Image (cartoon, rainbow, N blue to C red; front, top):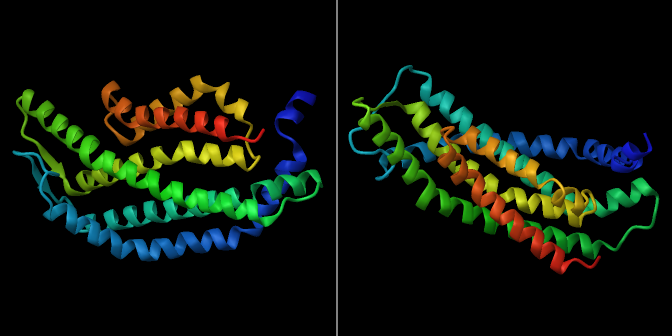
Length: 253
């Protein structure tokens, strides 16, 4: 029981849950506002994909099976945008206030606010940079390769490729979002470490779990073959190792 208490201190956990409850209205508001804004954005994204070259391999026919398909697709995309905004807000909040939350749980003195603001700036800059990096990776490498791979796989079997509009666009946007999110995961872990919400040794001692989690994540957002899973999870693990190395080098501990 004592070991469990050391791993999950009740005082710190209570402080975290209390902080999240105090932020519930803000986080929920961010989600719904992003959903409202994301719905028209989804229509714009669908139009871009329909008009853009390179997203539909040669010989592939796109069909619509039901009248509500476009509306359901826009709702799905808007939900993904809202969830991304929700998580981003939560990560930025923990980056800024993490040490204060832990200090409140331990009932010790709190650092000056300057440290929290510097971590917030670092988090925002890193989210933007890694998000752009993930977008470029998906646009230039991941999506062209997988779409061509799927079309050739069907062609080699002597089958005509007919893709449903909702599945096709949902698959493409899912790869974009999956790539952007996977590039953010190492940042989230580093922010949690710097904020005092996660121990660095907990991450480094569980690398095997991280490799498994990366494979599972890759299977969710791509065809479940080893190559596709590696293309999604591989870059995340590489960035994670780089992030942990930089965190260790720049740490003041």
